[in-house]
Image (cartoon, rainbow over all chains, first blue to last red; front, top):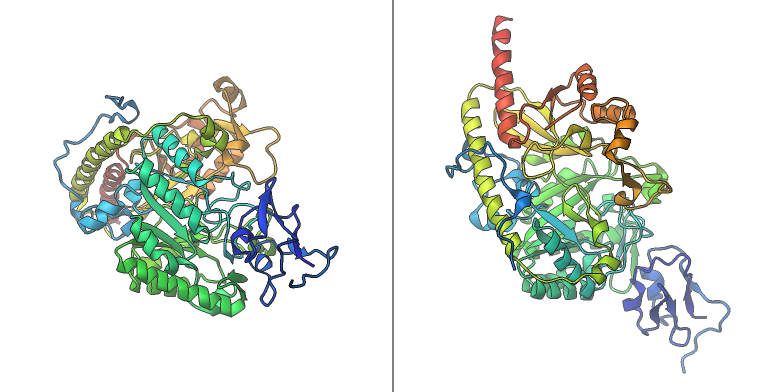
Length: 71
Length: 524
């Protein structure tokens, strides 16, 4: 279950983009998106995008997708 | 091609000869209004053109902020990141995206239009050092393309120790740190969390890390001779009693100036404090705290708590004239000459103003007792009483005493009557310039309740309340109706010094007042 950004509450402040250890976050159409293929849920540490995001509940687990499993 | 005459700042008449007297007995204890006689030559050279570091400079010079730093690494209870930071940049719409390249172009465009421009700062809307790549790239470009413009930045200090070298290498000689506490017990009431070392810290731990990093960064900067201004947000009941301790802590680490600002709190801003009903201080409470801290260091009183994309003299914002679309379409070139000519003009004006003040002070010497009087002034800048009462959106407040005239703050009031609320502009937040539209002169005549130039009675009430502790208001011109209403409120209207220098006029008025009062006092 990778993380996803709720675009309606995202302020596009850019804080999450550089802290993602997997370079999974990028801008798209004025908001930010997480590439589920790259997201590792920050295995072993707190999810960085959630930690830095100033809007409560803006970055959440995407329950529609399976959990990340290391290859 | 450089213009030979610079018409917009042609000096007015009634100048004194400019004999070169500087300050003289007019020494002010207030550092932000300190002149060349109060500061070392190196420090004076650094602050004399910086509107945010010198009260004197703020009459003459303009600043601009480029909003290239959207990300932040801490959460403050007075800030809602859905909009701009509510305190150090006024609440507004989410800032336009500005890349470092576009920011550099914007600086050139503004510089070409506003010769008063002396400083470019990066103050958010997040934190300058939470976006180090964008911040330093912007500074690099500006330094290359407009080398006569000074650079400065504002930060919460969390990442400051990591970037002191880069700041020094870029010759950024002004850094502002927002420090609201030195005690984590107070800090946890202001900062719900910080993001540091790949982790979100909460409560007292967060405040402890932040406080330590701020003090470390401050000491590192001052050790390198970089001037540091400390901003503190005064939050009644939270840190108002604590700010004297903050004042001592930052002074002992070499901060140059302390700027204690009132909390801006409004439920419409959606901040934690706004939503929980935490109030800001009154102007009188703010002044009391500033006065109590002043003995120990320089206090800034002229801060306007501007937006992270503000452009112009302090107290004005011409940001809307330089929107991203307009900048992108502009063809701009670098020409430092008008700014150089303006700086030379200001140097002459300053020595004239200093001489005029010194001669008035000499005349006052020994005559005044212990009395202190507050007065209000309407000005468009340049250190002169040159604004029509009806056009004033703020009043500058001076305290008059035997020591002379001291700037102690400003009071904002309603809306200048030349403007009215634009249709459909309701609902915060919007740029101030978008909320109002210009009223044609004939419309104004019809809208005014009298022909004297003042528009709405409730605005006049607002004005009277804002300056009710002032004995007089100095203005270049005023209509009959507001003059009468102010007299009823016990505020004397003085328009006999129209277009003269502020400080020397105030001292002259104070001397005359003392002279007339004295015979009566001795008879009593």
